Image (cartoon, rainbow, N blue to C red; front, top):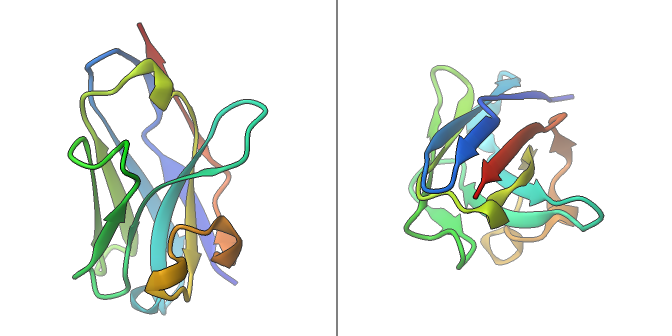
Amino acid sequence: QVQLVESGGGLVHSGGSLTLSCAASTRTFNTYVMAWFRQAPGKEPEFVAAIDWSGDSTFYADSREGRFSISRNGAKNTVYLQMSGLKPDDTGVFYCAAGHVQHSSIRNDGEYLYWGQGTQVTVSS
């Protein structure tokens, strides 16, 4: 069982920046693909970014590439999502997810076994 705890959400003006963190309680953190998904009210979770177990490969939703950066720290069992140039469309609950996922399925929320409780990000115009 892996527990994921997100933090760092909040209210920010359009164009602002936030960094989200997700701490994982597992001794095998470095074997998991880690990802971030965003869920807007009344909508399905939407892929934002992912990083493979080694940290060598990162993946982004087209709408976020260039503005968001995902990274991981194996010593701290933590994955980060640095967000800049935030837009009102980025508003939602951001969830951290973990799984043993193939690169071909990395954008598919159904492939992830463990999920955090989410952290709210609100971008005002």
